[in-house]
Amino acid sequence: MLTYNELLELRDKLTNGIIGLEEAKTQYWFNSKEEQRSWYTKDWKERKKSFIKDKCELCSSDDTLTVQHNSHPKKYSEYLREITRKYAKELIDTNPEISKSEFTDYIQKKHDYIPVPLCPNCKAKNPSERVRKIPKYRCADCKHEFDEAMYRSIDELISIFYENKDAYEIVDKCFVSKDKWRNKNNLSSVKYWMQREKAKNKDSETIEKEAFLLHINDCIKYLSFEDAITACKKCAYNMDIKKMDLCPECNRNYKGLQYPTCIECLPEERRKEVLESIQFAKEWHEMHSRFGID
Ligand SMILES: [Zn+2]
Ligand SMILES: [Zn+2]
Ligand SMILES: [Zn+2]
Image (cartoon, rainbow, N blue to C red; front, side, top):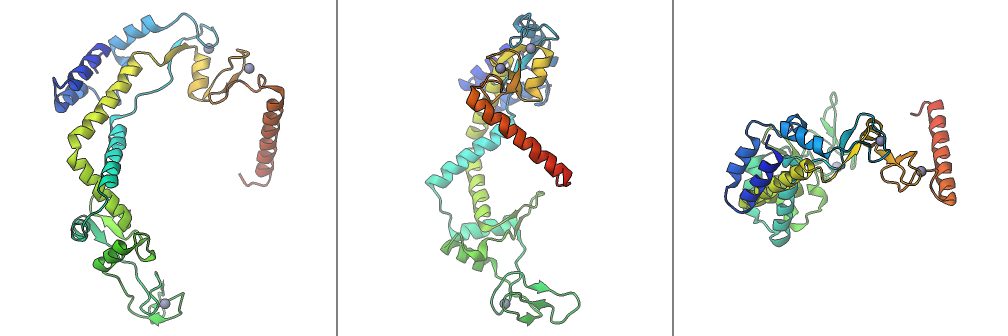
């Protein structure tokens, strides 16, 4: 794990092109895993010691003080997905068309086609399959009975897709990716993944660098304590587990992070409303548990 200063230096070097992305990644991940917690390092412990105040910044207690972060670094892999999605969207917005033959090639190379059985008479999907009776199938729509279902070819489906991408015939997820994920896709999603792959191949270096820098920025922000306060054990627990902090009005009650004050400190009218809705929720919950609905 790099120290705070080393991380700043790494970001500078990468931004100014003094080192390349691969070199930066190697330096960053050398001897460390992405998940490794920064507070195991000596650098962190020392910097924490100089950051931490002698009492809780929320309630002034001095019981077991800790650093309370308001945000945590997002993982590199998460940023990578996010940025890839952004580049895919740009590519789709500027260049939405793919030729039919290119699309067909891609599908055949990357997917297994599991066709949907159709009634040969009315072309309704998924006729009932009968285990004991002959003929094997019966169409629920037109009541036709038959032994052999009908299937559309890939070319037929693709032609329909190019006419109308929302057509009823092509909504089924009958294309299974040949990779280990075995994802089921319909033609629209196959097209999306194809374009996303194109964007990724075209701009892989740019995408990775952008994602890596965002992740490094998050880590720097985290290590700088810019977004942190000193909190006592109780306040830290309330923030982390219950998503609550101390009410700034009364400095006594805890409140949900999304609310400006605790219930008691709300203006009269608003307080009544909230108390009533809490009472209502309680009764509702009791009624449900009584009837065993919960
Ligand atoms: Zn506190
Ligand atoms: Zn039918
Ligand atoms: Zn209050």
